[in-house]
Amino acid sequence: MEKRDARFIGKVLVFLGLIFFLIPIPAFVYWIGNPYDAFVPQFSDILILGGLIFLGVIIASGGVKIILRFEEVQPFLTRGGEYIHSAEIWKKVNESGLYLTSCGRVVSINQTSKATAHVGYRLATAERATCRDCNLRDGSAIMDAVTSERGW
Image (cartoon, rainbow, N blue to C red):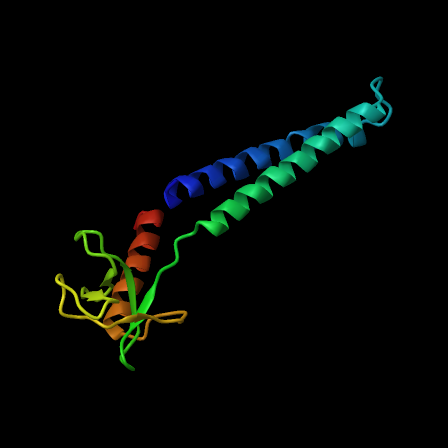
């Protein structure tokens, strides 16, 4: 199963869990708001609605765990004390270990590569890129996404 499919299943589970969680709320509000109504909730009614709430919480938390487990992590690459680049996996060539940095450079984590001359990179444990061009491109992509959501 691909990560994209797993994340979609996780989102569906979260949605279903929220539905199961929210179904009993109108019944509880009705019972609390009308205490002298002809209908008195029985223990089985409360047990069924409580079970739906519990089931909704379990399904939603399972969906969140699936989403978190299969979330896409953006790799950061560096070589010998150079700047740290943000990257994504390069899928246009059959060679493994190739990444496309945000500044437009195709790099390899292998020591030799037929597809690029930029070899010897390694995955860096960083929270953000230090390469100026990578930061500019990542920032402009974020700003473009925000402005397209708002319709500016």
